[in-house]
Image (cartoon, rainbow, N blue to C red; front, side, top):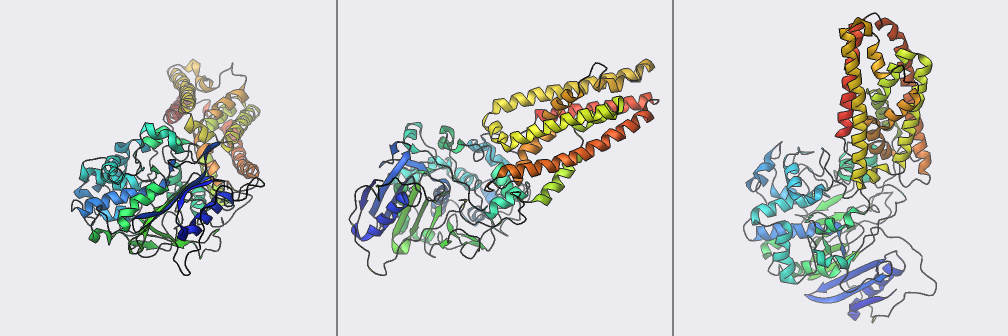
Length: 632
């Protein structure tokens, strides 16, 4: 493994540890930069940017939440110039933001993750994070999850739009334009909030993290409760995080995504913090610099991450998980005078003005761990001059990543063969089964007209259809549908048309029965005609196009399986068995109940026609539901 670059002898330990990261600790490609007193004392890079391609001097990569430091800096620059008052209400600059209980939100609340908008409730369309106006409007109209200023929770994906919109309103320039013109270009930084197309060829693709041995408490909470803030944050993202590879696309890199979208390298991160390490360096006044470091919000339980966190005005101070018994790695703190931000996987940039130190580290792998090292390679590459630092010399303290799956682990309580919360799942599944749907209505109608035996033939079609949907869900159908919108659109249109046609036939038959006594059986025949001799096939088709089942299996069913469990197939089998038992009991009740009620309504032609028309209207509603369904 070749490490290239320069390193002053007094920082040889940094070079040694960087080399060990690449050879022993699972890094694939990375860069590190240290600036002291304005001079670069460490500038190293090494490893692979992509299979067969070395990490070069100018390789850049996605640095995730390190982006928040750049966004916060833009706000502080405006505040330092007197153009933005951090203690003023947000509505002074963004009037639309004052709706639904947010009129008292201060600008500082946006920076300290106290705004109460870490996620959005209503599903976002595909590609929402690339549409700045859409996100700003949605956040302005959203009700906060808590009273702004009363608690804090990490605004992992919304931070950039909230702070960035204020920057845009005050400066008259987009966040990316402001950063480029006021920071990156004057400092000569290879740092982009909105990467130009001509720079795309230098980007090292992100290597996804491996599944952790234990779920972090954040992910456990998301899987246990689909309506929770963690679940909404993870699942309602317009496909940015949930669609494999989406964050590495050209569209994603080009977006001015102020929470997690920046592209740079260690040199760029350290270069951004360099002026701040020297007292402001023309970016902010010393008075402004003095308020950028102290912690402004802290809690033993972050409302989103569910671990102890501390933030200053826009910068991360700590994720202290050292006291948690299930933590896989020791937590870390920045000193009181240092400030910066980490990014998913471990990229980090920060500065410590009293020490006149700026630091940057980037890599292309989201999670680290032991990996195979070919025999005979040793540390590899050329040796840099090695001189031990003086005894007692202080080393930079690198903060942990707030969003990395490897931090903040907690054992998932109530785990049952990989099922994270079996009781919550059972309660939810029970009530979802009871909701009327095309499956149950078809079985009921068939049993009413043809008897118990034919009713169970239809029920068998429902069981098979649900089994197919469960298998597809466990195989990742949700990700496939998100990444292939055309496929989902075809499913929606075809299913909606079929269910709508059934509804229309039922309403038409009911109308004929109402008008003519000779067609007393028309309502039932509208759904189950004399020529319909294949109830199993029809029930199977209806089941596969049932919007309730589709949304249940790809959005709710999969949330209760721990992805780190050794045999997830067993978990899915347990969840599937539970839902099928509930379904069997419910459909049996409908079959026998429908067979009994059929005799009661045969002599009541108009009442029967009215009920059939109502069922037909429900089928039209099912078709409309499927036509407008989304997987956000």
